[in-house]
Length: 157
Length: 196
Image 1 (cartoon, rainbow over the protein chains, first blue to last red):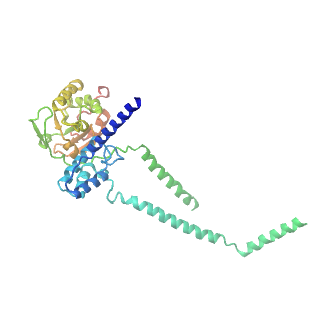
Image 2: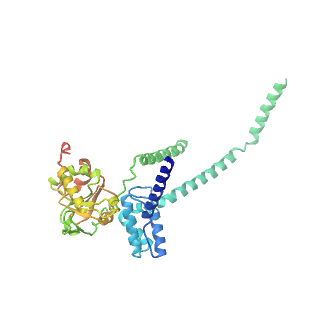
Image 3: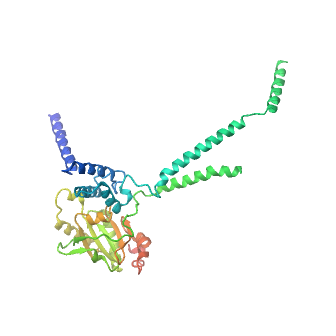
């Protein structure tokens, strides 16, 4: 008796969640190409409110608005770049997950390369210096040998 | 020479520490609005209380104006209403942009009459800072403004250029530091701390 009620409830919940999902996906397109652009855009555009989600994932008010706007613009036949420009004009570069390379962002690529180069130079230089340092001149070797000999003869006696 | 070489890692370490320390306390939500220093977007929207009264950008020009994006459903907006009412009494022109709740709108038509009732009630209770309210029913104007939620405020000059922006409530301190210095006659700067 108890079990059947639980089964019924969970079945009901399954259908409700199906329905909610269906509402989320309700952006119909006649054109497959447009559908593809829309799919890419909602993955690439970032929700300005909930910062680590794209607008496809987010249910924040502003993300829903951006999704609707994206749908509207794509339906009008705008290209992917045009829609991105539209959003960037209003919400700044922040809204796009793939920012362009410019004077501000170029350092993200340059600094790691520079550090890697500096490290390579440093290691090479250090390696050469150690190699030089390990060559002991003959005089010192003779002296060391003399001390060892001395100690050994002491030990024997 | 040796001391100088020793300094390099220490200085590098300090620089990295300062950089990371700043990151530790920086607010990731504090992103500058992309519309700052640009002209206010064009729009054509009705009054919140009267759908036959239409407003456009021309209604905002000629005077420094504070544009406040708000809604009755938004808790922080309640907090700033009394302070902004004081600003209005000091002579600051404030215009509301009513930001409807998309979560409710998603489940069918919002009843504008109910919204009007709620607005009237709330403004009667907490003070009415607005000369008029623009009803941004579809939130298109808010989207053009790069609004991420309510409340947000924009200060525009007499020619309609956005000269300041605030995400979140405006209180005495924010007004004093970020908005009052930009006004030609420094309105609201003589509000006392106790009054808020």
